[in-house]
Image 1 (cartoon, protein in one colour):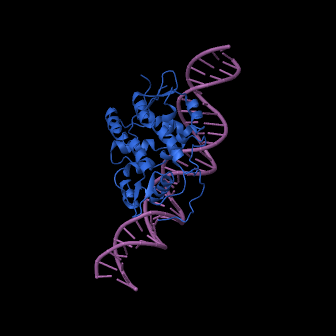
Image 2: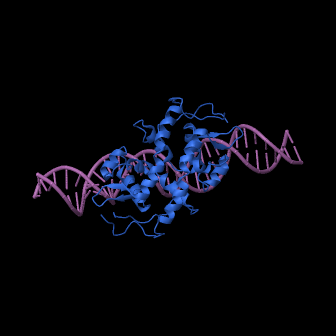
Image 3: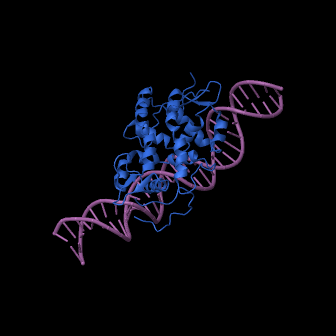
Length: 124
Length: 124
DNA sequence: GCGTATTGCTACGATAATTGTAGCAACGGA
DNA sequence: TCCGTTGCTACAATTATCGTAGCAATACGC
């Protein structure tokens, strides 16, 4: 087995209730978290490759997310280097996948780029 | 139909590639976004009730997320007040739901709260 | 009409998260 | 030994988020 990171115990924001779903939603709601899972859906990537895949996101956050995801048991650092999904992580990734097709439909369901601001008559 | 918010065009971070999945992952990767979808899974909630459901999160962010989610077409402000999911939003929510059961298994699959820091021997 | 309560929403200073750039130590191949 | 790559960190600058307070509009009972 590959190296394992700490635990998931680093108090996950918004998880004060102790309900696992809240902890998970919070963990996945941090920047680049979902993206990282997405980019690792295929073969493992080196930290550098992952960074490239994530639009050159700052290594600081990527490392932070990577550590958190490792502690959560979703990601692991392979023995030969390179980050990959654990079995658990792949399971989670399976639930993120369908977002792909959804996103496509979402895009086309949008009345195309109307590029206004937040200053419209504003209803209610 | 209920009131609609602006467009989804407010350049979604990480969506520079134009790939819808990236825009979606980024949108959902902002704080409270997933949580809001989760809390709205049932009946519509007033802004106040939603705030309560979200551990009294600051109204500033909630309003920001709510606006973004409305512009994305996932959430709408009902005619009689109160936020609810659109058809599209409910679809999206359906993909978030399974995370609930996953989170439960995830919790129990964890070697129980070892509460160490980020200072372990640190492998690699 | 008058007070009161609720709604959606905003202002604003304080705090925490993220960004960008640079660079380090460890390892491997030539 | 000299590169080149790996995972990872430092640090200042910029953003995002928090927490508290409050506003305008609406709806109620009186």
